[in-house]
Image 1 (spheres, one colour):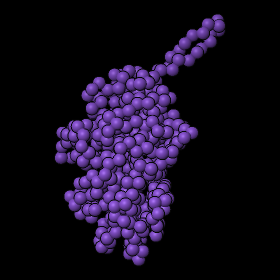
Image 2 (image 1 turned 30 degrees about the vertical axis):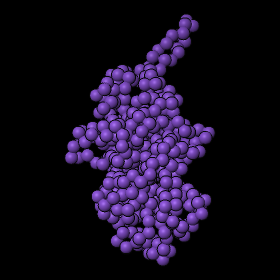
Image 3 (image 1 turned 120 degrees about the vertical axis):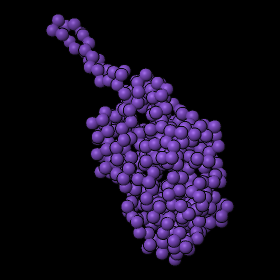
Image 4 (image 1 turned 90 degrees about the horizontal axis):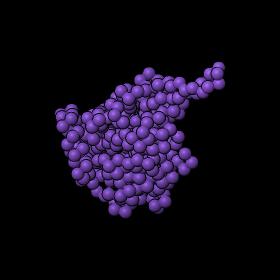
Length: 385
């Protein structure tokens, strides 16, 4: 990308000088801040693998606009302070042309002012609580309007559940998801008997599980920070002998596998499951297995949107004919990608309509598809952005 500046000479002749910021031989840099430590450390390595696979494929096919793509990874610590350091490092020191990341909501919220200040496009790839809006932000993960209905409707309509206990991590994601869930349950005629929160790094859920035992809910809806908190809560829930149905709004297939038998019976709502039957998904899984071999981490609903997003960025740059932020941002709402999840386009107020899958975790960690919901709209997210 180059910028032409007008210079008026002493003779009154207008000349042009060109300051070159990047030349065709320079790589396009994709910055990926993600939680390699902290709450997201269970799933972040799979996000890195999806990023590496997408970049490898793109580079093998000639890059973007004839330029190779370079991947830069930074650990955001799954939190706000780590994200600030990671975003600054990627944008200022490593010259990222775009930020594409699966992160906690705390990390995302800390990073947005940095991308705005530096005018860098940001594609957020995590399922989240919704309504994060910025001129530089696009999101291709699921939001409550897409995730909550499949679980709650199934529990009420198929399992006759009436009394619900809500438990989450005490930050934007946990509270945002469960606020929507409470309203949805009550609209459906159900009752929320309790709503409890623990810090993101909580490891002891004894008091909340004791409260569940007293309340005797028909179903428990969990919305904890992705990864480690999900594991500790579910293991302690099962160890306590609890029998209520469990729907989890943040468990992905990889995390479920890490839980082992403790995850059996959990219901999840996901835009991606390895069980999706399509030629595109089959080829994707084959390529991932070939590329990573025995080191492959199960692709999941927190890692596959990362793969999609890198291809969406590629399409936007190619439509714009440049990596210039304003041009790319204008193109991002127009482009689509036919990937493992189906066709994804961030055309609904910078969010994406998605096909959602209600899944039930099996004893071996795989996820059985119970129901499929085509092209679920994300609803009102960023109407004025």
